[in-house]
Image 1 (cartoon, rainbow, N blue to C red):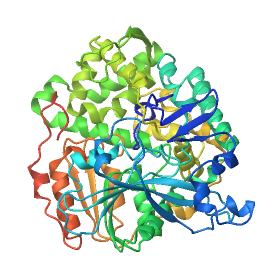
Image 2: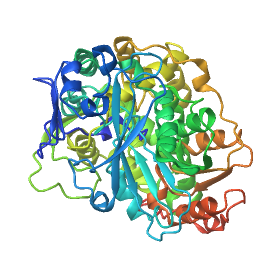
Image 3: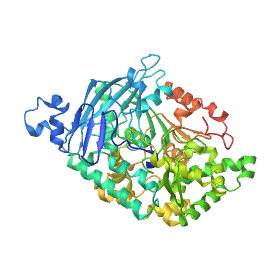
Image 4: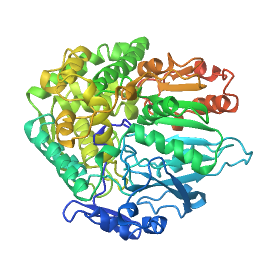
Length: 553
């Protein structure tokens, strides 16, 4: 997520441009002009690390970076797999930090840094952006920042989080990404899906460990320190933090652990660190769906046409969990759209779990169209749902999520702090009409507790989950229709922060800023004068779009 659903995070196994290729067969990842073999020592000797560390006398010191040391080196922007136009005008470089600061002999890792220049140069304190996921690649977001005019008057600094795509090393897992398509053709929570997914994660772990990766160094605490050391390395006195989705968990950790130099914080689509568990996504999905369906109930025409969308959804889940719908369809993500040219039909199994995950996970795309889609499905038009679920599985991207970072975060910071039966218990409370077979897995993180047993990283200290109460000016943004990280979660994050401002955009889904001119206007006013309450009057002027229309912009 972003805390986006895993099945919306596609992977490109064997990127065509030659800059990054992850191959589960030969266990080699090509990054830039270098090669990362299984042997981490060979990687160090043949890479840019060598020039950085050449003055170190002994072999042991050659591969170690003192705890707390960090350096920034300007350089060319990484060559991305997908075209990112904003990088053509950006300044770039690499931040070198220890892989695991708890170890004195930790190896160094390199993280990509992108600086987008302000369009109107005013010398104002910059914005630093924290990507979601966990494990999302930050470089493609450069185009989002420019398109949304986030860099209107301030530079935007973007750091690729440790383990993410284009970081060195990158902890992407082509083994895991390769399960997306086959899982579309099996029962979503069944034993075959479990074996596919857990085995793939175990294979990824085995490969990364064989390459010399210290999996214990990939977590939110280490990432927060990376940002703190980046600010110091760039010589920036103060900056403004912008976190999105999981990036808000990171931002809350950062402002608590490294408050120095933080002028303001903006949180969009919040996952509070103190609420983050595998189970909480059932709760947040229900909160988001309740908001969508409550808006339908408040609209006379929608209420007459769709009197009980939640009941209809639950009935669909029960029906197809008992007797799955099986069909060969061409993948189409948004019902009503035409298949992409050349799209081949695929065999899809639509069971209750697939419908439940689909309804919540893609509500950001459908928003007020969701009641219509549910009632169409209840009336027998299941092909649209099947095609959308197929598209989620077969969509291809060359900008994959880092499951190495995702698993490091979830398995050290979330899973150890919830009971073994937490997912089922939360699911039963949120969706009492769903069968246990559906509720047994989290809608965004299936089989995660099994994966964490295999990932074998240490439990994070309890301080990682402390509530953030710093008196740093903070703006919290939520979409009322967000069923991934709910508006309620945003409110819970805002409450303990003195003087914080919360805005909830009616009819908006997950990740509000790129889609809402009002949200961007409020953020700009807030960052200009963070010690003053921003003008939020535009929020009151927004209306939920008519049901059947696209989500609010």
